Picture 1 (cartoon, rainbow, N blue to C red):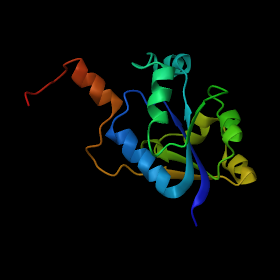
Picture 2: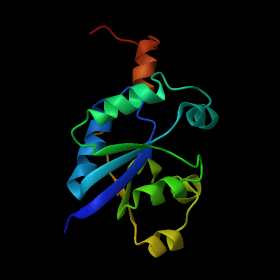
Picture 3: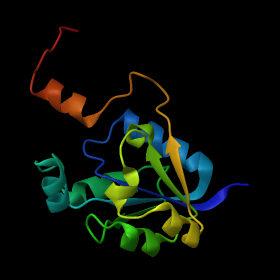
Picture 4: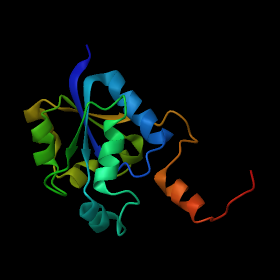
Length: 149
């Protein structure tokens, strides 16, 4: 049975095929994929640098993605429960890059909270070991270790 609503969150700076692959996999799990998008100041406080694209630019780009039903603002900052409750999903999806990190602490919830809300947390594997990342794109733009093509 396909779940009704899936929540995922992130920065989605410089949208690339790694993001699109992840979102396509999310869409296979749910009728509606809702992206909770991090604001610029939150990203700066978390990563120590602002995204290349502004919140509005990233939001408008995601709104044009065929896998995304809706984009909402990540309200609540590091405590993602408010944003999740606003969406009321049956699934929260994250990439497997979080499998070795404490995603529960990052999102400020625990398994009991998920169980009480009847939300499943799924880790979506990267489909290809050569999946592009925003960090890799930034490295290439900075011309670090660039090879001739």
